[in-house]
Length: 160
Image 1 (cartoon, rainbow, N blue to C red):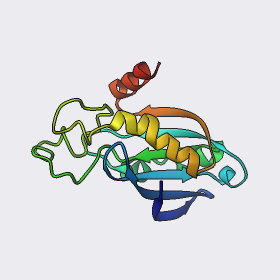
Image 2 (tube, rainbow, N blue to C red):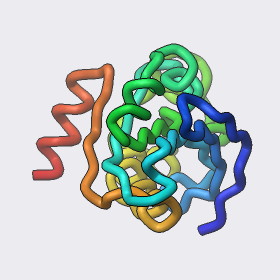
Image 3 (cartoon, one colour):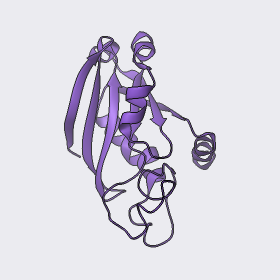
């Protein structure tokens, strides 16, 4: 799966990058941010996946949280995907801030017209980690964090 680099910035000795790729699960282009600490130049790093909430993109966490220094000091790679597929122009997709584009629900929908494109559980639990593991020096064991406690609990419970 081909990655297109959108940006790369030096930060606390590491690199904050943003990439775009064609998602099989979501049938669209998706963006994600990845911070690679200095340690990533010589060895694999543990990976933390940060799942932002409603109305966010991959930019929210990387620009507002201030995590870079701690990630650099602890040798932690941080991956922050966009919160939902974008650009389908499905009926109702942008009618409400808490549903459709930017909604941040990490589930696979089961109803039309959403079920072919809104497959965020499969994206964050399967497709994205496979892409990250193949493309970056990260340990395949991962930690998933979210500012949405119910989201994190549902991902964890479904994965047990």
